[in-house]
Length: 194
Image (tube, rainbow, N blue to C red; front, side, top):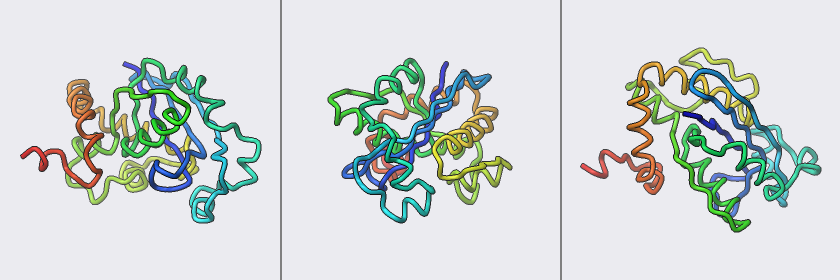
């Protein structure tokens, strides 16, 4: 199985009315990193100051970056046949899906969430945010809030959780992803279906 472990940086917290400004992907075959993809993306609007403060990405950096439609083919080809993986997968998926929809394309790969993997493999941790998991597992995230560095950190969370869950645990989470992507992020699927 091939996994496209992805992180994005955006102009805001919701796909509606906001855009991707950076994407980083680590292609992982379950044993080793096969390839990596990284690109800044011109959102066509000024970057909010709080996003620049958080990510270090500013308008000058994006001036020569391609808009999403110029990298769409390369992005789709890079992730072809892979499970889309992200930390809080609903967030990243909603943005990328919206960017593809804006250029008239459908994009809806199978999804897997490293946050959910970590919750299932390591119940009872104080927090399952990427920064806290990096601290818990002693993962060095050299450039936090930059897409490729966060994707590499998410890969390490994936590896830790996969050691506990194994293939059957991953398959069970894959089977749940279609319903969960439609639920609000604060609604626990198990409570909803109870």
